[in-house]
Image 1 (cartoon, protein in one colour):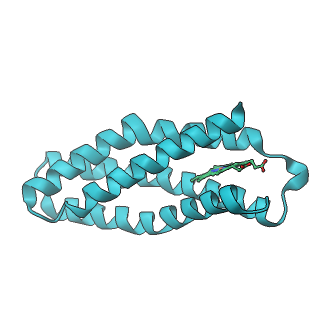
Image 2: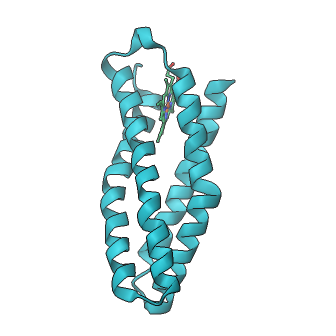
Length: 139
Ligand code: HEM
C-alpha cells in the first residue's frame, strides 16, 4: 500500500515537473509571458508539486529498510532524497520570482528564473536517476 502511494506520488510529481518545464521554455517570449509563467509556476508549486513531493518523501522514508541501505538501494534513496530536497529549495526562488513579477521588476524575475534553472539541473537528473533505479535497478 505504501509503495503504491509512493509510486502514485512520484508519477504525479514527474507529470507536474514536465508541465513546468514546458511552461518555463515559453517564458522568454515577451515580458507579459515571463510574468505569467512566474505566476503559473508559483501556483503549480504550492498547489500541486509540493504536496506531491511531500507524499513521495514521507512514503519513501517509510519504505526504507535500514538493513538494505547499501549499493544501488542506497543510491536510489539518496537520489530520491536529493530530488526532494532540491525541489524544496527551489520553492524559494519561485516565491521570490512571483513577488518580483507582482512588483513589475523584470531584472529580478530574470535573476530568479536563472536560479530556478540551476537548481533544476540538479533536481531533474537526481529524480530521473531515482526513477531509473527504482524501476529498472536491482535494488
Ligand atoms: C524523484 C523522486 C523519486 C522517484 C522517481 C522514486 C521512484 C521509485 C520507484 C520507481 C520505486 C519502485 C521500486 C520497486 O519497484 O520496488 C521506488 C521505491 C522506493 N523508494 Fe522511491 N522514488 C523517489 C523518491 C524517494 C525518496 C525521497 C525516498 C526516501 C527518502 C525513496 C525511497 C524509496 C524506497 C525505500 C523504495 C522501496 C525500494 C524497495 O523496497 O525495493 N524514494 N521509488
